[in-house]
Length: 134
Image (tube, rainbow, N blue to C red; front, side):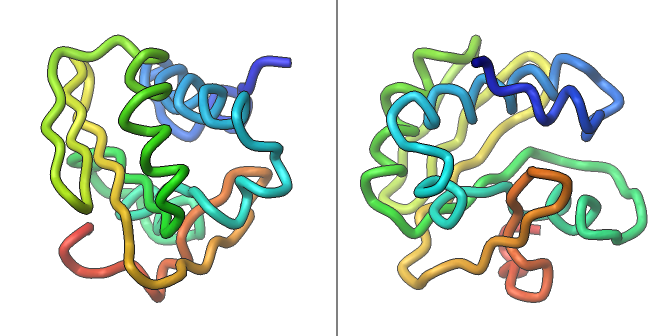
């Protein structure tokens, strides 16, 4: 079954962004089961804050976070195959993906991350999001 929670929940007004996030989650879920991915990978930054009830504000990029090296490695390979993108820059702890609509970041964090489920979408606890991601 295809992942579609971003579309169902209408996280973004721009449907193309919901589709990109669905594709990212689908690519990861094909490798991991939902139960194991739920505590390893989630949206972070401004999007996570908004999903958890903060006021709407412009989103400069869609950021995801994981503390699992295997998930981060999958983001470098399987996720990039799943989404249409213009370019990618790899760092030791971050992947920057350029798309036509909005840039995407995937962060590898050295410490565990606390993910909170909101309507089926997992996001980093807004009180723990580092300022450099916002």
